[in-house]
Length: 403
Image (cartoon, rainbow, N blue to C red):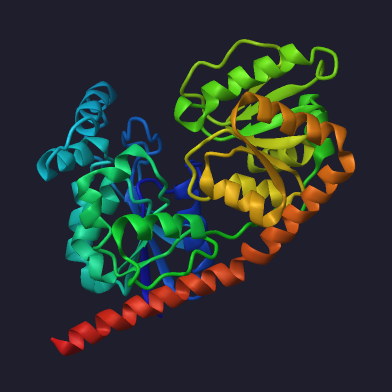
């Protein structure tokens, strides 16, 4: 049985980030085909990167997880100052690599392990282009590597170091066609084996999901749901402004409407009886909450897949998203399962349309489920990734024979 390592900055059930969750789900779903390991750090918090996991190894859902220490927690004040400097000028490779070291999570132990154990694995799968383990890991094992970029058009991706980095992996596994067009257009890597942008993660739902259970537990019935990190980068500042304006303009029609937040807050949340902050919730509460919601709101302009949008569609809930988020707008257009907006007035129109056109909202929800069932089934996604693993394994075998 071939041995495959998934490499990512954080890994574990306590880690709820999109790219990290995708990595864990893919690893777990390949356990019946390969001997799968995860190579990662001991960090849980993406802001500090400090070591929190105590054990060097553990077995998690069939995957052997090897954890390596981070050299030191991130100094965010210093990192933000240096980022502003690097992003505002044409910095050289030396300064940009210093930026990557500060970005973290800097684990020299992890990179050393990759270099020393290159021959022990048939393929390495790297999740998320942005972080230290991917950049230096691809330098070490690129010929055996598949990169899952989780990329979108954001400031860091325009740094010069990434022009080199995207040429290092043997193959690329894209989440969507929009991501593929962006990455291949920017980095001119159309010749690399890839999965043609057809789905980056499958959607698994629990056997039992209950909207009533959520109602009974929290006493909330009429609400919009947001799931994810609560931070400005995710569009949350604008989300709070839009929600407040919506309530102000429709005091009677939307008197009982709440905004429910699930996720860790790294910004101040406005104090309001109409905003309900639940924090980090169980998987049961998350799925029950989606089922109970009027719709899922994704205000972020920067997403490379959005698992939670696909989960909402799978649970037959409409989604409302910022139109500047090209990838998720693509989900809405292809599925006809969601609405998208430019600015507050269009957002207001989306909300009122869903509330006033029940038949159309139900049809939209059905469309979303059909889309997820067709394009985000685990069997087809794992088959595409397995094909790339076999391609990489065979190509490196041919290189060894050639030598």
